[in-house]
Structure formats: C-alpha cells, structure tokens
Image 1 (cartoon, helix red, strand yellow):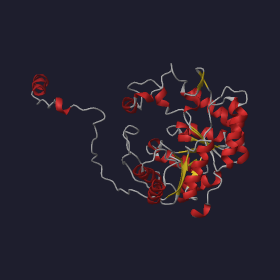
Image 2 (cartoon, one colour):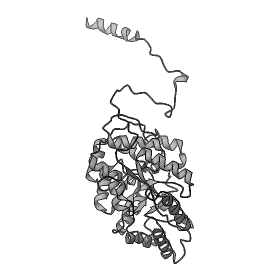
Image 3 (cartoon, helix red, strand yellow):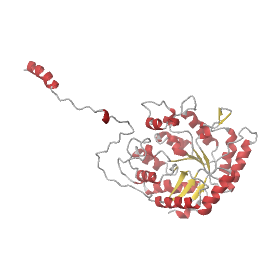
Length: 366
C-alpha cells in the first residue's frame, strides 16, 4: 500500500490545473494599486471639529484682498477653525501690512508670526540689527516668530552652511523670551528623506513622485546633525518657548519624542503633516497625548479644507481602518485615537491660548 501511494501522488500533483497568470494589462504600478477593502466597520466621518480650534501652522498671503479674506473666514467657519496662525508674516513693512490687513479686517480670527531677515549676515552688527527688527515687528503686531526649513539646511554664506545654533541669532531668540512670544521652528524633513532611497525606505513612493525631496549626504547634513543643532538651540534659551514643528518628525518614534519633552520643558510640538504616523498607532499615540497633554498643539500646514476631516476623525473618534488623504504619506490605513474631551480641548485651543499672547480667549469654551 505504501508503494502504491508513492506511485499515485506524483501523478495527482501533475494533474493539478494551472492557475491563470496576469496578462500585460493586469500589470500596474504601486501608484495605481488601490484595493477596495472587504472589511465592514462602523464609520463616523467628521467634517467639523467638535470644539473651536486654533491652527498654529498655516501659510497665507498677508496682502490678500477683502474678498479673499472673506472667503477664507467662511471656510474657517465651516471647519470650526476659530483662529488661524499665519506663519508667513515676513518682517518690516511686509509684516506690518499683513497685520493691518488680516487683523484689521478680522481682529479676532488671525495671528501673524514674523520671520527673520537673513540678508547681510556677515555684517558685524547683524546680530543686533536682526534682533532690533524682530523687536519692532513684535511691537507692530507679530505674536510669534517662525523659522522655515531652509534655516539649517540651505542657508549659507559663501558656501558655508549656517547652523541652527549659530550664535549670531542668539539675541533674536532672547527677544522672544523678553516679549513672551513663541518660536515655531521647522527643522529638517522626514528622516527617510535623508536615508538611502531604496526598497527599505518607507517614503519611497513620495520620493519617486517628488525626487527633489531627497536629501543626499553629499549636499546636506545628516538628519541627526540638524536635530542635534535644534536641541542645542532649545537648550540654550530656557526662557524662550519653542514649538517643534511637525513634532520634530518624531511622530513615528513617540518614545524618543517623550524623552526630549522631558529634557526640554520649554519645548512643545505641533501635529502638522505627521497625522499619518499617529493614525497607525492609536493606542500609543493616545497615551502620549494624554501624558503630554499640555505640550501638543493643533497644526495643519497646507491649507486644504477637506484634509482637516481626517485630523478630526483621528483625534475625535474610535473609528478603525479608514483612509488617509494622501497615499504617498500613508499607504496604510488610519485608526482613531478617541481623545478624551479634556485632552482634545488642550490640543485644539487651550495650549495655544496659553503660549501665544493676544488671542481673545472669550471665543472658546472653558
């Protein structure tokens, strides 16, 4: 009997039907592959925030006309966005005009942050000049200071990179401490943009679509170098309040971010452009937001009203397995953090009210 089985089995295996192979029309790229899940779960889409909120990370033209401002405020009302922080205020006359225009038309709805003038950095009195300009900008209505990612990555003098902790900017940071206005600082980009661009890189698709975002080591410092300079800067100014834009690109390593929060009590973070990281680890993220509930602010960055809906859904619901709004940032699904109301209020507006001077708190619930 054993011998008979040995003879029959190979024949049976050979008799198995061949499975159809995909033809050339069935071949697709990673960009095209978008399967419809068979999973059926409850859905609770959110198109308006549960509480009025402050977006601390936005960019608008300060010289937009009245019609454009009216349209912007109408769109903000639809989201329950009560106060928008425009980080692109500039300096000098441009800053003053932005304040006069945006706050002149809507006194309670906008906050303008100044930016530094990086011209003439070789001048011996540059440190004093840039600090005095910032002081005047604050007197002219600026409620904070914003640094863009070029600070540290691209800013150079005669080919030499200007480091984030360059001492010629010390006086400007101390001006922020003097007037108790925060510094929202964007340092570097996602860590994966600095890593080898290969099959193991989680941002491969984004780099394929936008190759200029890759940061090769022969042209840029390492991600770790930039971050080391940032925290050197934060530690040098303990009386200055820093808002680490994009959670310092550590949304995918909240344990490390927590250690930095513990080390630098003058540093907060905001969630612009890193929701994809939070939405795939809802329990860990919820625990982090609960523990550091006084240290995280709401920010979005790119102004696109429909994209806010995903933020609301991640923060406010316990929904499972729903789409992010941009595949190149997340080819995975999102899960809701279902934040408690007291934590949600701090994220949406209470923390911003505490650190940004001059916002009318009567617009928000207790």
